[in-house]
Image (cartoon, rainbow over all chains, first blue to last red; front, side, top):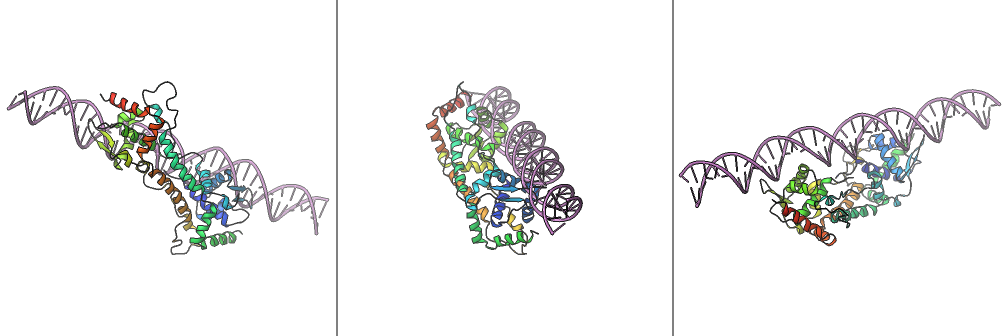
Length: 160
Length: 160
DNA sequence: GTAACTGTACTCGGATATTCCATGTCCGAGTAGGGTTGG
DNA sequence: CCAACCCTACTCGGACATGGAATATCCGAGTACAGTTAC
């Protein structure tokens, strides 16, 4: 199981948009800052925009911006925006294919295996939903205070 | 994010091996029972064997068998055996690539984003580790009592 | 009759194709700002 | 001098290639059983 690379990019991008409270930050500048492929990062930001996490603005002076305060953006929101809504474990009901299967509905009760897997996945989703972008900002400020200042300064200096 | 199909197969296979306490069940018969591609299922069972969850036996009358009682096999064991040990979220330290980076070590403190994601993933792993194969057996027995009997009967009848 | 031997059929195990999705790229639609031109 | 207009440059947005990993398959190594043969 492997999470998409874009999730990491999206999280760092949101963190940065929270730090830099400019009018808007374009995907190109964000990509330059993190040394990432601009067009592909743009794609990820589009997904965040579609999910309502960011607001986009076209044209010069355009770019992306947080759609709501960091306290109201959870990690679950970002992950769901990039990875999609589907669960990681998908029950294909292979138990229905066993022989001696009668003609009618075989197992109306839900699959115990799928239930157990879903239970674990819900724990994961809850843990993600309990952590907001503001929490991550605070943790970073505590462990690496200079990071946010550096980001702000660079984005102000290279605005011209 | 998408979990490998083999995880579902592996879980159902383990469940079946727990029900059917024959000498050994071959991958071919298991595949016939669930209508799955035999060679590929064999590959998954090999992974379980390498992980010490199953024991394998070659030759006629050979096959696979649970290596230990179902109470001591957790869902985490099975998932780890198929998916590998690596975490779903992998921090590539893109924060290290920001400009104005000095020559020495930049951020000795761990990445807050990676920490938050790991936290959620640990919740998932714990939830998986807390559920044993015996638990799933009990749940299935409660919701679908006929399933285990059917399996046992089919594997005994078609032994010849 | 018994025991050793040989052949066969069946199993796992790993090396080998193929398909599909994540990754990466490109070009078009739209917009804001500035320069220009006419009044 | 001022205002309307046009043009350029820059942005997002979605359609289009590419690569690598999951999926699927095939063949070889090894083993237990049965049949056969020699004693």
